[in-house]
Length: 215
Image (cartoon, rainbow, N blue to C red):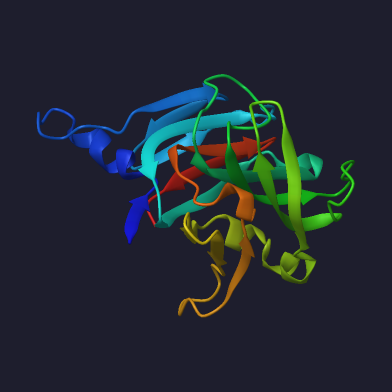
């Protein structure tokens, strides 16, 4: 099992003076990304296609762990973030997709315009084909959990843990409110894609300021 703590580079950024420590290759493709302390911030609430690309080999079972904290930007009733996994080729500028990959997306939109996206709190899975083409694979209404979106909860980092198997196509997104990790949402990638491998992970935000740190 390969464990990829998404923001290992946050820890290593503080110790780059040591020759034996090397940062993973990363590109801030769009948006306003900056390191501050032990967190990575995306500070442009107007950026609809903010994206940070991190190079990491992915194959077989993978675990992605990180935490997210809301900073600002959802006053207009819209905001979201997500993670492209198993990305083969990526585009180092603003783009809708991220090469051949799967995008796991958490969304809040009081007036969605895309068919199949519920009003309010929801989650989506997209299959990305290129920088310009993505198809909606699955959409889940999460409004039963909207009561958790309080000022107090949003002020604290929320841990995320994602398990994905590039051989079987199974992806599990664990419930961040369940400390025992017994409950999760899962889906299967397209069998035609299997086995799927990738060299990049792309972190995305849409119309919101967020910060990210270690799980």
